[in-house]
Amino acid sequence: MSHTIDKRREREIQKLHAKTEKLSTAIKTTTDHRKKEALRTKRYGLIAQIGNLCLDQREFEKARTLYESLPWKSQGAERYYGITRELIDKKQYEEAKSLLEEALTKYPESWSLLNSKGLMFQGTDNHYEALKYFERALAIVDNNNTAVLYNKALALNCLGYHEEAFKVLTDLLEKAPDDPGYLVEMGYCNLERKKPWAAIYYYRTAKEMGFESASVHGGLYCAYVEADLHHEAYMIAREGVEKIPDAVGLYENLAEAARDLGSLEEANEVIQKGLTLDPEYEPLKILQQDLSRRLGLKIKKHLPTKHLSDAEFKKAERDYIEMLGEPTEEDLKEIA
Figure 1 (spheres, rainbow, N blue to C red):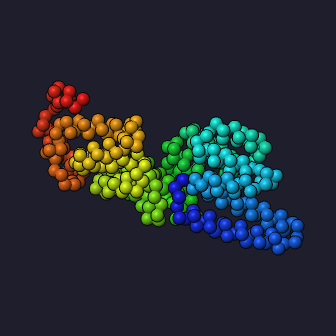
Figure 2: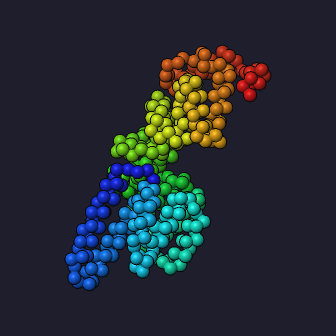
Figure 3: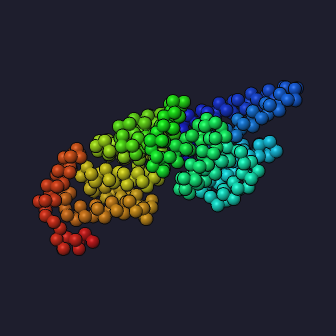
């Protein structure tokens, strides 16, 4: 699940908290020992669910407090899961690996721990191993756990099995059509399936629900470009930089969009801002080299300043490069 905070997840947390409060009251008023234990077990399950959602929100202290409230004797697997998930989300993979080996020795049939180990492999880009552990977890829960199915879809997409991922995501969206994580991943899946209009639909649906993230803005930008909607690509790229100014990849999108619309000075300014965030970000450095060539050939002086369609801009660019001729050795020295 994406780590971006979203309103849907917050509402779910509130509902689960309300249920745990009701269970706490019921536990206090119940005198039957078996019923009391059953209610406690149910409450522990809800607490684990809230902890998992807090981890998705990257609210680590809240999640830790919730998991630590669970008793080791009856909820040991869930406590291990909470600890390992935090380590994985903080990219402390070696510590997570060591603890998961210990945990799975004690709880080999815990689907949550198998899922956690899959997430660990996913975090280290070992998607084949990740997929194996997600499949093992799903076998225990009869292929009927949406969290693990979603992780399986992520792994399939990462491995390039986009048609298989599409099937899993279709099933997930039938169960929860307003889940932003499913919508965003389906957007990416369709982008990779060369269906940009479908990708636009899913990314925009997630965005219209208030789900803002670099993956939404970046995915929507790529989908617009693939659909030859270059002005729309420019607009979403600009919005992305304004709303998420610390995501360096969005500066790459805006610089590329501005360049392709002929706004070379704006593209240059965007590149400089992006490089202040990460001076070693290679895609921006490559764009900077391309822009230096274009500015060195003085294309900007001849290209119209208004926004053109992509086809119009490409034609104008070809015409003016032809007019200028191939760069001389002096031009190349100046650019270098």
